[in-house]
Length: 285
Image (cartoon, rainbow, N blue to C red):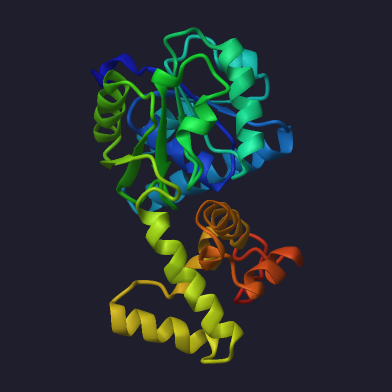
């Protein structure tokens, strides 16, 4: 069933988009990696090449395999060209509902009716996103986890109108990509982020109220819960802006118990977004 996927478009060349692109290209699928500015595409391709260079150095792939993977990836600024002869779009842009909807409106006009639309959203309603298109039956969530090249899980999020055929195709595709697909009916935050947000937000509140220093919060969680990263380290790795978007969305859906801690709001307002900016809960400079 997944053999029908030979060419896809990944929209957004940031950390997630570039990682998802590597996953598809490594599975033998041609990828058009799309962004709105040349500098974003160049940065995305830089991430791709860096990952592949390290993979060759660690002997996980050969130089010939690296060259083949890169040959399958085409950076593209023109959305119309990028969507020619594709079978799937994977959206991985900023975690803002209106921005995603505007993109899907454009894509719906450009793509043929048989193209499946997938969003990598962390929490936003698949049904809501699909409502601006004429293909809600071919609209689904493919929520990869960071880093997509390493993490096995893909949450396959089923919207109200997503067809059984679409679900089956995407489940099979995920397996072809070497991932473990886990289906989820639609709900704010889906499975992982619905649980993870409350856990992380409580760690922010512990720090904010002076219960413990950040290093001790992280150390206690790693030792006590056997987690590879502490909650504040993990938040910096994911991106504090991403966490704030998730928290704001869940609070809007479920009320003030999900409201992001003030310390998270403050750091994002100051542009301290975690590892990607060099400063977040920790300083990486």
